[in-house]
Length: 285
Image 1: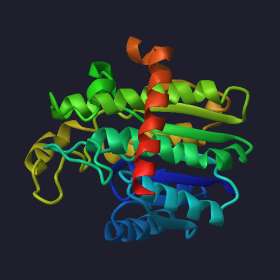
Image 2: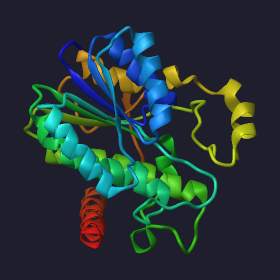
Image 3: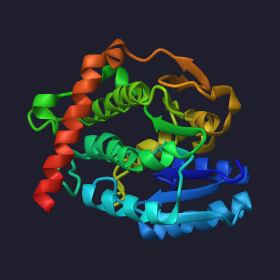
């Protein structure tokens, strides 16, 4: 992994941090993308220490803000000439209904739209890598997901799992459509289900809600390092060189839901996502 530049979102804790540590151990230059500055600084020190790799950097970005993603990618392009591996790891699942800075339902806004826009903005740099890889962390929860185009924020019928499953189905539809659009290039796009992992996802950091449930279930869950295993494999293994448009679990390609293979739906979501971003951008300009 020497001379490779790797960007990991949601890098301040859980699977994101574990992914950064393991990839940094292999000698890559790792860019940790975090929303919270203080937690990001703490995680950066830990990653450097555990990997014994000083070539790890922290960059801040809130994936719930199109404006911040634009500023972040502009800064990234100034500093780097290529990007070898993009790991879209950041994920939100939060009790109660929340909105992004742009007014979108939080899970759809961060888990899908933020990563959709980040990837599109960095695509030129990824194409400059001899073997560019895009890895999206999805979830088995996509199987109960539907894309509610007529009510994307789920204002009429919101539940936490409905919102989360929608965002995770969107991750897979996006991955497959991206792989189709990148056909004939040196860039691959794959996604994965990490399995049940004991992280801080599902805990409201302001109120602490969800802490007890998470602690109770922790013994039955994988560690963040175990959960990160497939993402690390997809980022670093020569076994998957040239493999694209697949959904992985435990380092093996498996079938995702029937709905996730609907090309018309994937195309519609792509267009829909672009229109939302255009709408937000025109409002802010």
